[in-house]
Length: 161
Length: 130
Image (cartoon, each protein chain N blue to C red):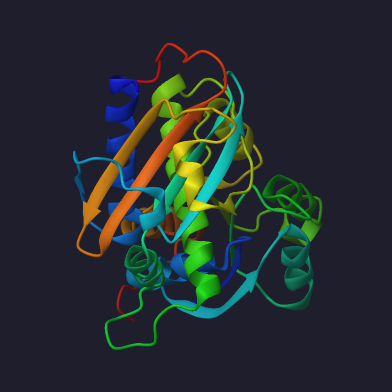
């Protein structure tokens, strides 16, 4: 794992969760959440000066909390529908990715970010032998959220900070 | 003056979020309509009176870029206030978008930021709480 990448990933993820879903989290230095503990995951692929994907895996309570906060659903109101929960997770992944790439590569380069997709929770560990270059877990009242960044090929020099 | 707003985004949750932030901003709202891509957005524009369009860029069927181009090609909409709300982080791309005569707001965004953009575009928004 790349410590610099992990620091940036954690910072962007915390800030986005706070601003998009009004959820305030702290970095969790414990062991990564086992994929089996996650209910669902979302992944978004990007290409440009370098390519890869960002994956977000969350527990059931966390998924509901993200969607409820993004939609402004108060306690006591009906919980978000499953479609809304999945949509919220995908949008969260998309926004974190969109905010992460300029922090890694600067604002003068152009990345193409694909539409986010739902993936199996095991994708957080990597597929086809590919391992994440950075991984961060955030602890929240509602549970844990775990982000993993995959980069195809060499990890680029960080020019965006 | 209450603004009739069209929100164009392929994510239903993001459309709801934009509406929530709009309400929090205190900008007086009239009818609020939603579309899930640029094509639906154009169809809604043809059918209803819209004062302000808030749209995403990356959408299926028709992107926000194409919708803006098509809107600007219609004489009566050449000055229609439009705000792009996107995760785009490239300054090069943001400048290209702004050159089309729209405001750009980066996701995530605050009620204050969108109120300021709306005020600058329309002059409406000082009537907070009305």
